[in-house]
Image (cartoon, rainbow, N blue to C red; front, side, top):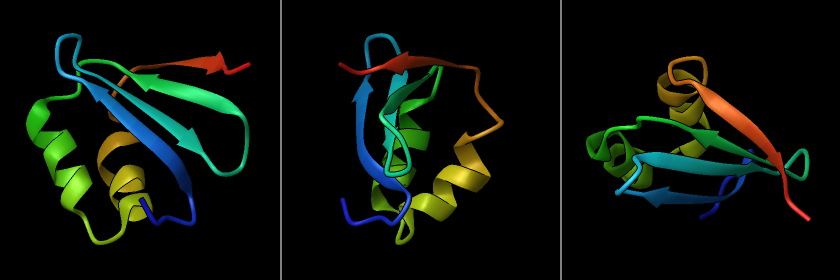
Length: 68
């Protein structure tokens, strides 16, 4: 996943949780109730960071977890 903003992403369709790891820190951001269509559009977006900033960040509730 080449991105200047996003280090990694994972989607759990059973819980509709999109987990995002940013390049800038070690936290994992778990975005809740993300529709499968939004995740599919994210995966196919030319700029993952731009899509994340406009379509996911500040649109879905999230929880921050510190990966160890």
